[in-house]
Every structure is written in structure tokens, then in C-alpha cells.
Image (cartoon, rainbow over all chains, first blue to last red; front, side):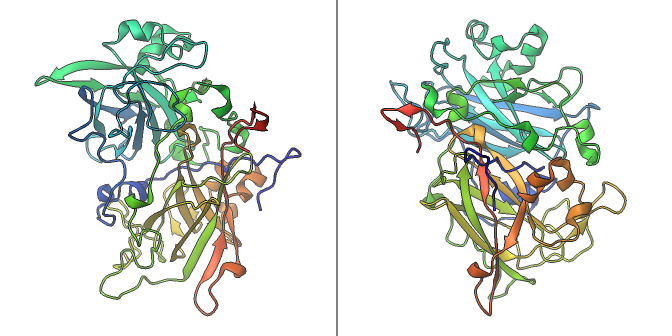
Length: 211
Length: 242
């Protein structure tokens, strides 16, 4: 039985750590076996996906500077037009029906690296009365030792003008902390790669959101 | 972007704090800075939508989804079922629920698990389903065994099943663990004790449900899951979402 308060609202189910074996349920191939015909969240882009192909990648560090090698990382993003593939997005304009915008992977057990092949998202509407959001990708990560999944955002270093007016980046008071949300840009054999390292604790700690 | 689709604020008191030294791994993985409070925008109120066509016919039957050549996993067969609701007590249909667990001996099918209990050749230990129109989920499995883990030298995890749940928006995303009524290890578990409120810990415990059991075959447990509520606002003379 779930208790409710005097107005009839139910309390949220408490979170628990995903543990060291989160891969079994969500990315079983990394756990070492094949079971599902369709592994959810593996492929973000297909041949018809609109927009600029990019790779985003990074590593996760704990408070001692050690690599977190057992994390699960999910991303959620808008399509190249800035539309989310969800009925609550009531923006008008073009939309890429082939793009779900959700991906899931694990950090590599040896290198600690996570990565996604995706497309650069367009700018999305802000809250009413706010300026538009700069292109961004929402990241969510869980791992052994993380009691409640951590939410953050990846912004793009080559979008300085849009970043400067982004209402979320502007919420971060200390400019040095803003930089923890900006992924560095590089070209690898002509293919854009954005590097986004996450620091869970201590110096250079990534800004995480209570959203 | 209109206000009616926002989620109510998450109550931190319902969740474990990030830094919980009784669970030692949290000590260097807990952010020290306070989370930045963010009003919901489209990035948070939207999220991936899943369809039945993405799942396989045996995905919710862990007794059969990894069994070979007519074999079956060792252990006590159980049904686990319940509803996924939001904070407004509204059932959430079409929600992806994924689950994973150890086998009956307490061993995970995972390349990093070196506990010396046997691997069950007929048990994968994972499954998934979508909630129905009334927000119900159900799956069949074997009851997981307890197992020791390296935290304090004699720490044992109670029998538990891990759950991953999507809501309609990414801000509802939740991973948690379900425990079993009457397990004597519950009060000794460092991970369950990361939840400070005893009443909140109780909400992670599934109750034996004889009504849903299959006579002469399978016991059942019931466990309901509550995700963050969305705001009810007056919209064209009725409460949005109600």
C-alpha cells in the first residue's frame, strides 16, 4: 500500500543505486550475453536522419580523479530542427520523424569512455517568456555509488553566441562552473567530435540539475 | 511551452542523499555541490516513447526468455506485478519498465560478478514490459537469492530486483530496487538504509499477494511504483491530466 498525504498525493518511489551490474538489464551485451532481439537505445541515427552527424564522447571521474568504468549513460535531445519527438512538444515547423532522440550506452570497462553517434540538435523553445535554448543534449547517468541518477546538459563549444543567451547556462552564477557544461569541439578526419568529461565531485565538479 | 505539463518538484527527503557513508562507494561518487534547480522546459517534460513492437514476446517471462532446450531456471517461480502511477495517483500507460536481478543462488550473469555461487545456464536475469492502459505491469521470474558484497566485511544484500522506469518526461526517469516482504536482511542492508525515512524504505518492499498467485504453481508479489507527478492546472474548465 502506498500512503498518500492529506490532499491525496502519492510520494515518489525512492531511488536506489543502479549498482555495478546495471548492464544486465539495460545493455546486456556489455554484461557479456545476448538475450533481446532489440537492444533499446543503441542507434540514434539512420540513413534518413536529418542534420549534421556528430560524435559525442567523454569520461566520468570520481572525487579522487579515478575513472568511473561501470556507469550507464543516457541522452535525450531534440532533432536538427529543435523538435523533441514527443507529444508535449507543441512547437510548430518541420520535424524529423525518423529521429527518436534517445540513446543509451555504458562507459567502457577498460577505458572508461562513453560515446554516441548522433546529430547536432537545433535550438528549442525556452519556457514561455524565456529566450530560446542553445543547442544542447540532456545526459542522465547512474552507477554504483550514485544514489539518485544525475542529470546534466551538454552544450557545444562552437555555439558561443547561442550559449551566451541560454537561460539555463545563465542560471549558473559562477562562469567557471558554466564551462563544465560545454563540450570541446574537434574534427577527427573531417567528422565533428565533441568531448564532454563529467566530474562527479571536487575541483571542476560538473553542474548537475534538480530539474 | 505552457505550464500545465511541468512536473512537481522532486522531494529530496523521499530519496537517499548523494553522500551516504554507510554505503562506501557513494563517498567519492557523490556530488558535493548542491544541484542547480531548474524549472522544467521541453528537455525535461518530454522523453522517449516506446512501442510494443520493440519488445519480444518472452521479454516479460524470465523463466523462459533465456531457457535452453526445454530447460528451466532453478528457484522459486514468482510473479511480480503492480501499477505505475504518478504523484497525482494517475496510472501511467505505455511506460517502459525494465528489470534485472541475480539468479536463485545470488549470482548475476555479468562478466564482472565473481561471487562463487553457480551461474544458472537457463537464467539471463533481465526482462522488460510496457504498462497497459491502467498503468499495470507484470512479469514472471524466479526469486533472486541474497548475496554478499564488499562494503562492510559481512554485508549481504537482501533479495531484490532492480527496476528502471521511464515516465512521459525525462525528468521522471527513475532507477530503484524492489525488496521482498519479511526478508530478515532488510534491516541490515547498507543500500536500503541510504533512504533515511523508514516509511520511504517501506515503499520499496513488495507484499506477498496470494490473490494474484497461481494455485499449485507460482506465488505472486505486488509492488506499485510512483513517479513524479505532473502539475494539475485548470485548463478549459477541467484539471489538466485528470
